[in-house]
Length: 611
Image (cartoon, rainbow, N blue to C red; front, side):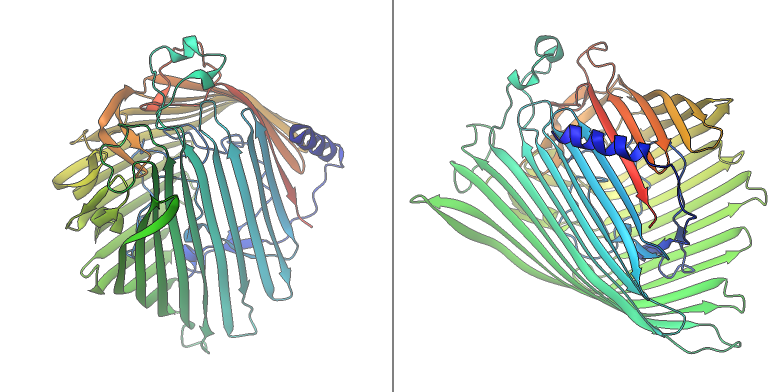
C-alpha cells in the first residue's frame, strides 16, 4: 500500500506545472564555520542529478542502520578533545553537532526525500525552515527501515534535529540553539553459518540460511542539545568588530545490547547470567565554553577566536541478572571526569589564498596535556583552473573511556592505556576546472587501539605508517559522462589496518536536457570494486571489529544501474542495486559472515518547496 501511495504522490507532482519561483536568498551556516569569516552557504535550486541515487554509501555490512568497518583511510576531521565513551561504528548514519544547519531565509523552504525498495526498505526525510520576523527555525526528520535479505537483519534509523537562531543588524544580542537526537535499533545475527556457494543453493530464499545468533539486538541512542549566544560590541571605523559569546552543551548517549537464551559456546566467557545478556552503558557530558572573537585588519580579512572550555562527564555501566524470575540491575561502574581546556582559532583570506588554524590544549583534568593542532591552506588560480588544498594535523588524545574499563555479561576489562599520537598530511590538487584531481593522505599512528580477539582491546605501542593515494576524473563527450576515482592504500601493519589495497568507483551515463531546461534525465551504470583483503570480523557483543575471525573478502565488482530524472520541482530515480548478483559468484562479502545485500529495485524522489 505504501508503494502505491508514494507512486501516486510522484505522478501528481510531475503533472503539476513545472515552475519554480525566483529563489529567495536562503543561506545557512554551521557551528564549525561559525566564526570562520561567518562563512555562509547559499541554498540554490540544485539542477544537477549526479549521485541522486547514492543515498546510502556502501559499507562493509551492506544494510541500513547496521555497523560498518573501515574500508578507506579517512580524511575526516577528528572529534574535539572532549570526553567520549565510544565512537559507534555507524559512519554517515548519525547526526553530529557539526552537521546542524542554521538558516536565514526570506521564504519558507522545504525538502522532502522518500524511497521504497524490496525487503521493506523505506526512507522518509523532511527538512523545513522558515522565518518568524527576525527569528528563524528549522526541523529535520528522518526515518529509515530495512528488513534485509537474511534472518535477523532488521535495522531502523531515526534522526531528528531542530535549530533556531536570531541575529540581525539592529540588535547586538544573538543566539543560536539546537536539539539533535539519533536512535539506531537493529537485530544482530552474528553472521551466517555457510559462506561457500550460499548464493547457489539459497538464491530464492536467503532466510533459509542458518545464523549464529537468534535473539540478539542492539539499541544506540544519542541526544545533543545546547545554545550559543553573545553580544556584538560597539565599534567604529578605527577598530574591528568584536564579539563575546557563551556556549552550553548537554550530551547523553546510551548503548544497550541484549541476547536472550544465547547459543551455548558463542560467548567465551559468562560472568553473571547464562540465560540472558542485558548490557547497558550510558554517558552524560556537560560543556561550558566562553570566548571572544575579533576581526583583524582594516579590511576584516582575518579573524581570531580564543575560548575556554570546562567539561564534566560521567559514565555508568550495568548488567541485568535474572534472579527468581525477576530482573536485577547490577551497577559495576559509575565514574566522573573533569576536563579544562583552551582553544585558539585563526582564519585569514588574501585574494585567492586562505589559511585556517585550530588548536586545543587540555591544561587540567583526566585528559591533561592532550592537544590538537590542525592547519588548512587553500589556493586557487584566477581562472579557477588550478586548485590546491593542504591540511596538516597532529594530536595527542586519550583513548575513549570504553577501552579503559568495560563491564558486561560476557566481556570485562580494566586496564591502563597510553595516549594515542596521530599525525596526518593531506594534499589535494584540482586541475582543468576540477575535471582531474589528485589526492594523497599520509598517516602516522602510535599507541593505536585494536582488537586481536573479540574480548580485549590491545594497544600497539610502535609507529604505524599508512597512506592513501587517489586520482579522479570527470570527463564529458557530448552527452556521455564518465566519472571515476581510483585509490591505492598502503600500510606498514596490515594486521591492524585491514583495508583493501585498491578501490575503484566509476560511473558511465548518458544525460540529456529539454530545450526549456525544465526536464532532464540520466541513465547509466555505477561500479564499486574493492580488491581482495583479509577483513576483520565483527563482534555483536561490543559493536567492535577484531582480527582473529578474518576471512579473505573483496575482489568482487558491485554494479548498479540507475535512471535519474527531474521535472521541476521534483527529482526521482530508479535504481537496480547489485545488478550483477547471481552472475559473479557468491563472494560478495566485505565482512566475514555478513554478505552484502542482494539485487534489489528501489525508487526514490526529492521534492523541493520554496514557499
